[in-house]
Amino acid sequence: MGTAIIILAVVALAFANGANDNFKGVATLAGSRTTTQKTALIWATVATFLGSLTAIALASALANAFAGKGLVPAELAQTQSYGAAVALAAAATVLIASSLGMPISTTHSLVGALVGAGLMANTQINLEKLSSGFAIPLITSPLIAISAAALLLPLIRRISGSTSISDAECICIDTEEPASACMMNDMALTTDSAPRITTGTKQQCDDSATASTIRVSTNQIVDRCHFLSAGMVSYARGLNDTPKIAAILLILPSFSGLTGFGIVGLTIAAGGLMFSYRVAQTMSEEITEMTAPQGLLANIVTAVVVIGASVRGLPVSTTHVSCGSLIGIGAANGGARWKMISSILAAWLLTLPVGALFGALFISILA
Image 1 (cartoon, one colour):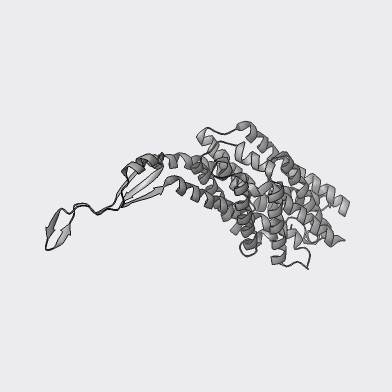
Image 2: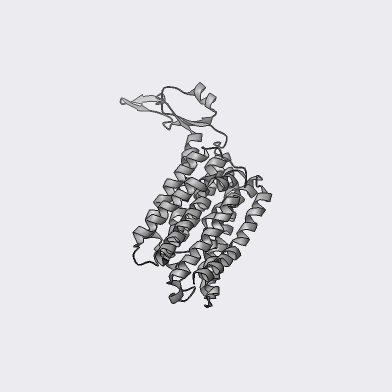
């Protein structure tokens, strides 16, 4: 009976995680009208699942952290009632937020549940571990994302403006051999052999192009880089979140690392495909206005922060980092929708105590 409860609890948590988190990596694709929500979600699902599969090799330290060892005594962390209570508490917290369209952190839900269930079990919480291993990375990571996105956007604008590419629709590279300046011993000498590069609108490129002109669409370049960056964020999310959830399933000796990570990865994918619409709407439409280059920047910042933290075993929230990047972009471009942002921040503040309350409730029932 205990084994069945653990499995159901972990499946519920993984499904809730996918519903709330899967679209976050590709929100900029839909928000900037680079592609449709459906296409963005499919791309997110594939990239997230790849992150889940590689997490066993690259982010196993996170599984150890979220097993509760070090935060609560090992004898409690290894009990099935504690593991099931933590998973059910985090799942309930995330599912409620998903139904309201609020992008919250599964990581924060788990931390709250770990602490709440531990306190209800009358055990001592390792405050040093809670601070250094959980609180500091969770608090600092969104601040880093907000600052990096807000500071880099004006810099990128200046660079693109100085190169005259910011408003161009295409780049033309004229490869035609220049006329010879003179002949010397049957060798042609030219005054300028470098190709001529110009930028302009599509019509200007059409008017000036010759048979030797190579044309490159700046919109296609940005869109492809944007898709790649969104895939990187989704991959990073799978890499960071899967071991946190699988840690609870690995309490059961019959589940190996690969099996546990695979089950969690598949369930996360299913949750995203079936129940992510409300959060997708919030993330792509209601936080800030953005262009494709701005979305690309937000994704790069998010991917760098989350992947860097994952391989070091630091429990950051992909939700907070990705939302932080969007908030930073909105603050820099003047398109932030502060009313919605305030609601999201309020939901973030409630995540830990709600997770703790559910953790205490479920451990009292299951124990």
